[in-house]
Image (cartoon, rainbow, N blue to C red):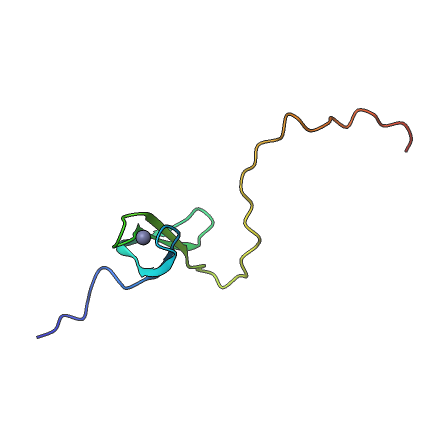
Length: 83
Ligand SMILES: [Zn+2]
C-alpha cells in the first residue's frame, strides 16, 4: 500500500558544485518575510546547501538585490560645482 502523503516533496534545484540539476534532499519549505516561498535543502550528492525560491504570490520576481555595502573607495559626490 502506497502512502501518497509525504511531508516532503520532490524539488529540483541547481547544485553549483555538481553543476547539475539535483533533487533537493531534506527539502523544507520556508516562507520568507515577503510572503514568498522557498525550498531549502541539500544536494544529495555533495551536501551543498541548495535554495530554491518558489515565488508564492505570482508576482514577477524583481531583480535580486543583494545587500551590497557601500564602497568606501567610491568617490564621494562632494565636487558639485554647478546645478
Ligand atoms: Zn552537489
